[in-house]
Amino acid sequence: MVPFENYLVYPAPRSNVGDFDHESLGAEEVWFNSADETKLHGWFFAQSGRQNHFVFFHGNGENVAMMGQEAKRLSNQLNSNILVFDYRGYGKSDGTPFEKGVVADGMAAVKWLCERANKSPEEITYLGRSLGGGVAVQVCCELPPMAMVLVSNFSSLVDVAAMAFPWLPVKWLMRNRFDSLSAVSRSQVPLLQIHGTEDNIVPLELGERLYAASPAGNKRFIHAEGLGHNDLPLEEFVDEINGFMQAVAMQP
Image (tube, rainbow, N blue to C red; front, side, top):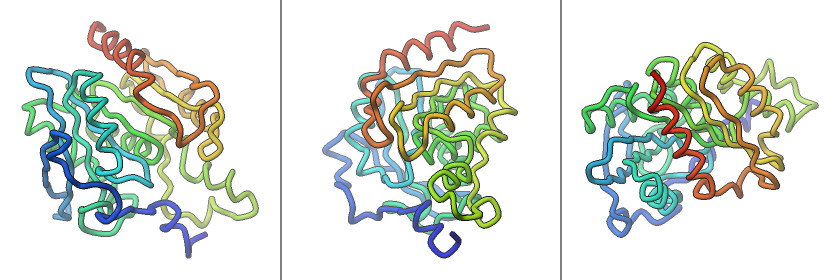
C-alpha cells in the first residue's frame, strides 16, 4: 500500500487542470500561508451584506478551478460567502500533501476567513466533500465551527482502503489515516451529512457509521437515493442545507 498510497489519497490536480480565470466567475483570488509557511491559494465568493460564511474543503481529486462554477452557484443559492482553497500540492498551492499538513492548511483557511470577515470559527460553517470532510472534521477538533455539512464522508480513510483492498493489511500500512470517527465523537457541533446510496468509493455504511458516532444534539442524515460518489450535485440539496442552517441559527 505504501508505495502508491500518496498517489491514491492525493491525486492533486495542479494548475494545468481546470480554468483558473477567477475573474470570469466574480471570485477574488486570495493567498495565505499555512502554519509552516507553505503558500496556499484560494478563491473567495462574496455576497454583499450576508452573515453566513462557509469554508469549502474539496475532495482529493479536485482543485479550486475545477469546482469554481459549483462554488459560485452555491454562493448564490445559499446567499452566503464561500472560501474555496487548495491544499498544499493542489492547484497553485505550494508544497506536497500529507495528512498533518493538509489539516494545517484547513486551519489556515478558516483563520483567513475569520480575519477577513471579522468572525470567530463559531460563526462559520464547514462544508467538506469526501477527503475534504475528513479534513474538516479534524479542523473542527481545534477550531469548532457553527456547523458542519459533510458530503460523501467516511469513518476513516483506513476503513475506505480496507473495503477497496481487502487483501492488504492497510490498518498497519497506511500513513494517512483521517480518523473522522474518533474526531467527530468528541464534537457537539451540529452536523448535516449527505451521502449517495450508490456510492461505491465511500460506501454508505461508512457515512452512517460516522453519523452514529456524533454526539451532536442537532444532526441530520440525508440519503441521496440512487446517487454515487462523483455524481452528487450539491445544488440539489440547497433547500436542505438552508433549512439545516436556519435550525442551527434558532437553537439557543
